[in-house]
Image (tube, rainbow, N blue to C red; front, side, top):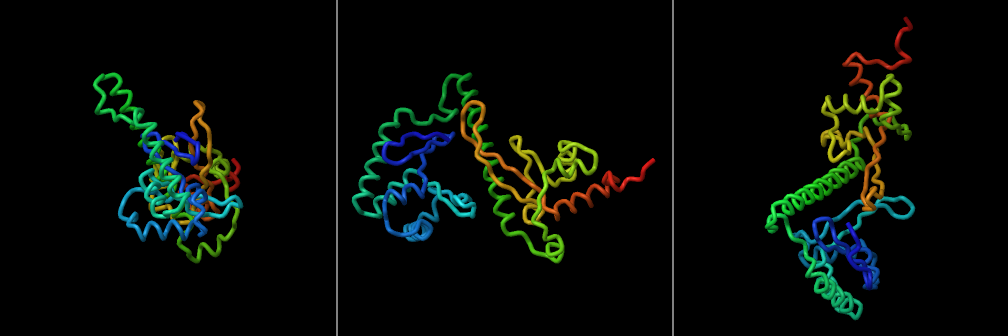
Length: 259
């Protein structure tokens, strides 16, 4: 995703050519006098956006680390919200968004199937598939994180209340193996799978309380911004892995009898 223009309000363009606006940035510019969460929910419900696909709620964090929900708006929805406010700031923002559309209309996204040249069409198709896979991976990462926020509570959860978490490499070391080897075993046991170079849990394990994950902003070698997920295992997850490995006959180093 790149910044398309930042003259009045940041307008971003996704890898597949969609122009979007950050809901909180628009809310701040409009100066509506209401807190963001109540304002955006009211507008979504009152003006029928809930039945459309003009916005995407995403899980984020406040500056002090507390979870919150942000909203990414398509440019059409941003224009409608400006019109709904019906004030000077709203009219100013709406005119600005219209000018942005006019300015970049010539460079509008052209899908691969509209490209005549077969080599250029193939290259564009590869770009589209990469972008699609990246979006799907981010959605799956978000799904896992949301499920982790509300794990099912059981008696075992009370026993294993430790807040300490460990990496897969730390767990693997207890068994005398590498993190890659343990990841491979968890894949074979259908606990996790690899999506776009990112290990993700299968859905049935999202809400078991086995992991705690966080998304991290990174910059790729080519300068493009991206996100990756850092997954750490809870003590409950560590016990789950222990039981799984025990069935395979793999025991921790400290429990092995000396020869």
